[in-house]
Length: 232
Image (tube, rainbow, N blue to C red; front, side, top):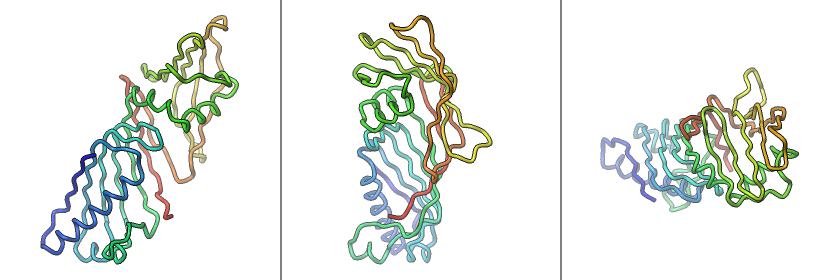
């Protein structure tokens, strides 16, 4: 994992404080993910704000991120109004958030990352639940691949399971419940004559998450939205 952090310090004291804060934020981020190949942190704030443990703006750019077995590709986070336990940090204690943090998130995920994520029990279980009654109950995930063609996601399983599921990803408009909708679900397999179609399925999201845009093309999935990082 490689990382960098910048703050544009105007004094030695501010430089030392920025180094402390950037190091603490970097360690905290590393503790939240399984892996990140690259990590860049940039934040801004006046000296008096930093001395209070307040960071008005912080931006995190990471690549090769893996979270709970999910391969998230390229991640860009922008957060504001971050308050940290600076007094405890100066005593060598771990970083802790003092209030919830609103975060804007942008993800760019390659279809190969989606396929690699299928090895995660978390994604396997979620996929079983969403496609219950469509996919086999005892789905064998070995050799299964995900492809992104045009605006559709394709889940392809080789023989002897031999099935091909395709669906369109969408964000329902005028819906107060945060969710991703799988539309126009089609399945073709060795045991079926022709293509079977199924009604749309919804993937509910946590109340602290909202998705603004979700598109896929040229083998890439782009997602942007907002989330709230809750204080533990």
